[in-house]
Image 1: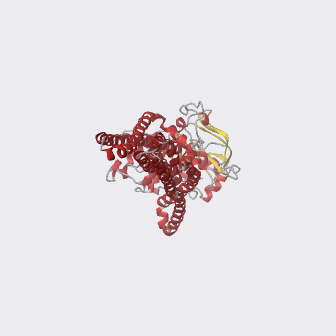
Image 2: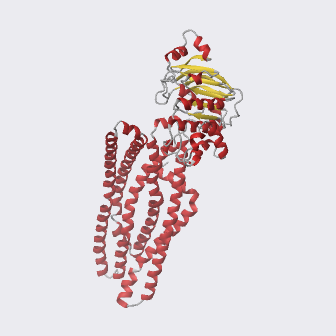
Image 3: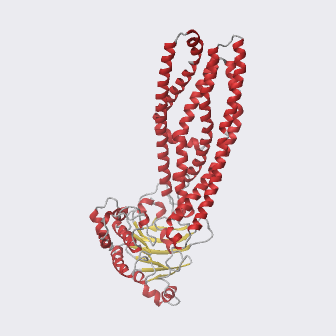
Length: 580
């Protein structure tokens, strides 16, 4: 479907407001046309004969009031409809992006996605909220004035409108050029947003390695490309007004030539001629606005194409038709010949026919060298990625056959890369349980040994922690994340290097909290510190995406030619802290 027509569908819920806006536009056009008609009695009766002055004055005042009120209501109502349409589109786009799988975000940049929600939507907003109103209002005005000219003198009207078709072809060609240039410009703006977001998020690294000049050069180069694209758009749009001026000049010359002959022959009165000239002058402003409308619509179309491309992207973790809710875990989680490969490298198996089973309540440690597939394996459980072969079953039910919401509601996660939000500490802990009381939040914080440092902060649990929790230390952020998982109280836990950012003293405290957290819960633990691995009921050793060994700590150490024993001997657990 044409992107502009697809945009119009978002206005259907607000059709009453749109209909009222159209009525106001028709009144505006009628009043505008009526004012043009008054040129005839003014020059035929009021000025030469001094008659009819009262009704002409009343008509001028009445039509001006009607025109002003109609213009106000048409703009207000149409802008309201447009803003609501854009609000719905922006909300739908945000929700669709947020619902995408981890693979979607891995293939795109944060700055690029932000550009869709801000820059592209803003471009659409300008057209939907304002340009579409101008298109309808000015088109109705032109139709009224053109009808008046044809009613007054068909021959003279045809002389005025003869040049109109001549301008259609260049308008179409310029519109196509504007759309192509605008799309490339939006892509450059997206790249500029990505560079900015990346530099700001990594500002510490930029400063530590004196990368300010390098980042400035990247930004300037992207800004220069954006400037060139914008100038191409400007060159196309700026060609439209002179084109309208030339068309208007030829029309005026034609009217003067034809009108003078008609007056001399007695077939046209001075008032009728004045009506034509006045109507033509009144038509100039709408024509000039409409000449820019096409360019604006083409710019919005380019932006809408990018937005709808994202909206039409199917989530890899979408619910199947008829998917049912997953009952609480009772027996086991089984990996059956699980394989996985990323979309951009389908021939490179990150996981290759992984099979093992975890009984409910067991703690399973997943170990291996960096790149073995540990993090990828646990990311398949909450369906951040979908398996490309085999299956994962909870109590015998394939997780692809249940709703994503019911699956993830049973999973708590603490990752190495702690994610906190620019909010209060209390709200960050309660993120997974918004209805939790402050007492429940404090209990979770005490269990995670976070209450002690929270109590020393100026506002306690109401302390704002900044973007990504940067006002807290790494260990403090990690303990807040663990408190968040504690409060969720999920039957399944995924701990991905959950103690990696803690010093020795904090680790002892958090290990105690994690031991309580994992009690009677099914836990997948990626860890390299033996204090966590030793307590695991089972240890799964991965090697290049395959299960090399499964067993308990002591049994694996005692096994002949054990990879786990070699890892232990080489003390690689503490070194291998990167995500897989």
